[in-house]
Amino acid sequence: MLAIETSCDDTCAAVVDGGAIKSNLISSQASAHAVFGGVVPEVASRHHLEFINPIVDAALEQAGVGLAEVDSIAVTRGPGLIGALLVGVSAAKGLAAATGKPMVGVDHLHGHVAANFLEPDPLEPPFLCLIASGGHTLLAGVRSHGSFDVLGQTLDDAAGEALDKAARLLDLGYPGGPAIERAARDGDPDAFDFPVAMTNDPRLDFSFSGLKTALLYAVRDLGDETARERTADLAASFQAAVVGQLVAKLRRAIRRDGDWRAVALGGGVAANTPLREQVAELCDAEGLELKLVARELCTDNAAMIASAARFIEPTVYPGYLDWDAVV
Ligand code: KG4
Ligand code: ZN
Image 1 (tube, rainbow, N blue to C red):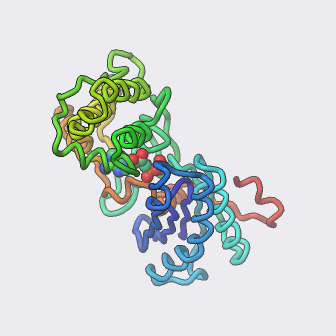
Image 2 (cartoon, protein in one colour):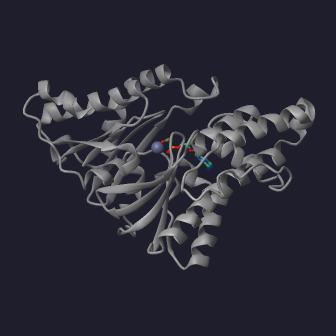
Image 3 (cartoon, protein in one colour):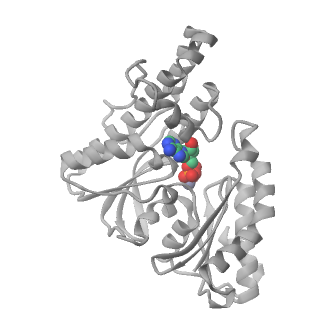
């Protein structure tokens, strides 16, 4: 299967055979967006347009297959930036039209969950999956390969979005999550008492906007110069509050439902080392199996889209005029 993912700022193509990754290429646009301190949708669309064909060719070449040998074509159909999605969906439609192969539209979040189904060591449902990315934060109850229940989700910002905004405030650059993680290594996570929101709320929902405001006030109170000197402490304390909330809600979900035997992570924030370590400690304490996919499968990629597509009935479209239904 050939898969394409262009929902945000990475142009991705992959070839996957069953659950085995044959190629998984990512053309990152981070440097193009860094000067703006965040993703500019129009810039993202233009980069996708420029790189989509070369990256599909490169993915096929690295996998050692021609387009004729591909069984079907998978593509992220949403959610994401509409202009960015359009480039991927149009490319997939073009390839499907040219070859007569079936095409599968995949939900991006299902893709993050399905990264856990890839080899080696694919995880079998049921399991509890924490998805934390730049656009979403949710707890998914995964009881089958093809679908999941949303047990709780963010009421405002996503965890990755909060990290990106904090990095911008602290002048640490973009993307913010890795920048905060790096800066935090030299800092004290207890230096600032940032709020870990929602921990007493019985629901499994998240909230990060108050934390962002708390950081803004802390920086204002310290003054520019002192805030700069204490960047590492601010980053470490902020990261601790984000990770603390994610882990607290995961713990609540494990204890509330009681019957989960395994936990998995997904989304870009799942690449965060303190989060991975604390979830590992939690799973140890609760006696649950933990599946940690490689970091490059946590952040956006096309192999996870192929992985999800395996469990969705493909559609063979009779003519291009009917294909609008896919988007
Ligand atoms: O899943 P993803 O690649 O794209 C979306 O679907 O949004 O996630 C991107 C998010 C960004 O907010 C980025 O700052 C965050 O994941 N991220 C991290 C790390 N690597 C990426 N956050 C914390 N620690 C990291 N190491
Ligand atoms: Zn994503």
